[in-house]
Length: 480
Image (cartoon, helix red, strand yellow):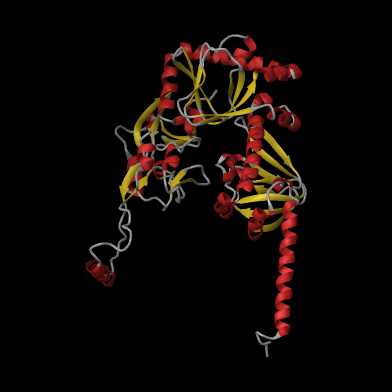
């Protein structure tokens, strides 16, 4: 027979157990305060994290986060060593950071998708605390000190990552990159804003942390620059005014190295100046070719106007491989989705027809910013998908500068059983004149998402000649 609820011994046991649980929680809370990455965060905020923490161990040389994987966790390293790794555009492996006890990683997914291309690997046996990002993201607005701390870590890491991706600074070791990072100033530019202007004096070296820009000389577009690219160096090296204008195509964040710090760095590292001079010579030659090549200039302008360089890949066809008037790919798309998401005869670049379709913009996607329901998200393949949170409001349709999003009528659920049809009909007749529930959307946004949820892309699979392909944008218009 169990003890009666009012039994003094039972009450004493319950009180003792509650006291033990409080002591254990207080002990765990003290352990959180010892984590370097959480220094300065008050216990009142850390207490909210205790119920989210999961302890996990990794053996040496184990992948914790794979490159391009969308991690669902924030990690705090309790013991061991891990490496943050990435692959440069030229395939060169990069060591971005070495993390030790007390460091954290995975915070980038709280503030954007910048860390989708970073891998994390244990070097020694590692013990970590994992917190699910979805739950933490909901809590973060109520935890201002934690939010500020994680943002500071994210900002520092983003700067170091950008420096590591730049070939010019690739040979710097981690302490040198950390030292350089302290000299950089962050600046933010909105779309269509000039960053530097032709014929004005140069006062800094600019490094693109996030975003896309175009370079114009005498009003002629000669190049595009993106994450990891730099500009402003010619004016500093020659002591002459800028010979081009650079303005933001998307929302752009740049790291700015003042002229004095730039010259001091080159004085300390003459090898950097030699590499920079070689890059400047290549850039001048490229500019000269662009100015002398009207067709390339036209193609470059077209790629910018149609957003072709804003994603990783482009859907292209080789027209000479297509039978006359063939639209099999468009028909296959319509058959699968009930709407034609791609349109042939888009932009002619070299031998390709870059078809009109969603560009899967990685940077500053206007549709994502405009959606009030956060219904557009990236999947693991880097495609923007429209989730069931879409209400059909149409904000993304008007926001897209490339007319890649359509409004389509929702397909009604088919009910063939006569009993179900009878019940549905009766419910409609009995429904109040004034609905007691919100009206369900009749339309939703629709666009290409690389056939998310299927094992193939309908358009490519249906093409009988292999003309239609999904290729890296660098294959169409080499960057740089």
